[in-house]
Length: 307
Image (cartoon, rainbow, N blue to C red):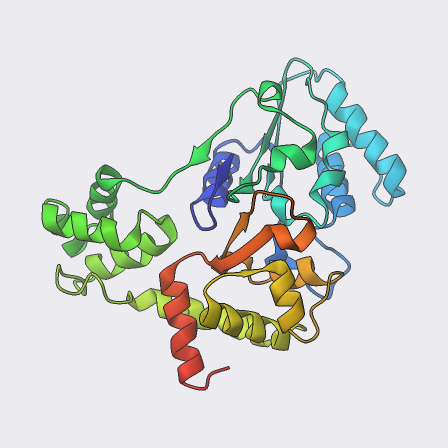
């Protein structure tokens, strides 16, 4: 399953797991990397977590080679009952390509593996895994929400939002402003339900979004790479789009070795495009803000001297 950042991949899979408590799962997130020994983006910890769920006799602490062998063995053996493994956000693994050899191209009957990753223009994580379309039972791409979905959202929100669901001009304007982005629509719908949103104010920044982004910015301030993050965002505000190589050249403290771990902390704000042609490494990647509202927010903070 693929989708842009904020398009609901994790929410959808979390709901799936909640409805099916016998499913085995691991949700990979850079947000939970902290000072503890557990790193949810490390393949070793991912495999340890899944092996513990799949095999009651599994003993944590195996060396990486033994752990990988054990995990692949569990996936190639026909299970006694249907087994579903949900692995969310494989793009946040420290190295996605390490996972590929551990996933059989043909699973035994009764074994299902569900993977999700962020959509990146010009790149598919299938290539990193060594998979092609023919190896998949089903491939889903989560699009933005259409007008019919917006009407349903407003109805479900209730309050004053329900009355706006029948206003075609309002729904059209809301769809245009949000571009169908579920993350952004959440805040618009909350304002609509509270009576803060009208046809005239739908283009304004929704109330909850700024508070959410303030919280995210506060987390960045506590990051060990605060200075690099501030400079990356500032240069993108000025230039609009920059390649990975441009950022390494411009940002003090950013280099080829730490680039991915540093950028992963702010990837939720960015759109990554993989360029065609005879380019290599970071030259192939271009970065920009994934939503104009993020750009506007950071621009306002920069003008206020908040950085």
